[in-house]
Length: 60
Image (cartoon, rainbow, N blue to C red; front, top):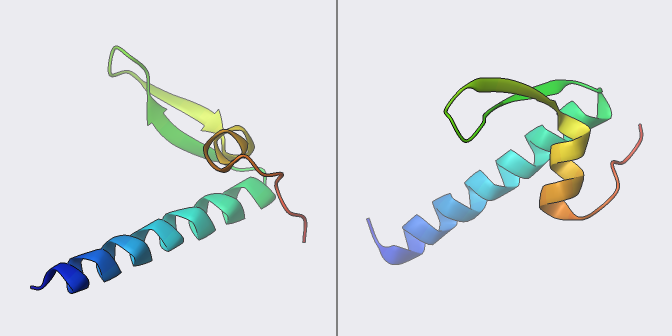
């Protein structure tokens, strides 16, 4: 696999993550994360989306 293929896959995964998180945020859903001790926590997708992408959650 060439470096160009790897970059293309990486970019596609970034887009997929963005779109999935945006959709969950729009639907007021939760996402699963872990805290510093490795414990599972549920966090509102809206908070994660705003924190990661520094943009407001779009509405339908």
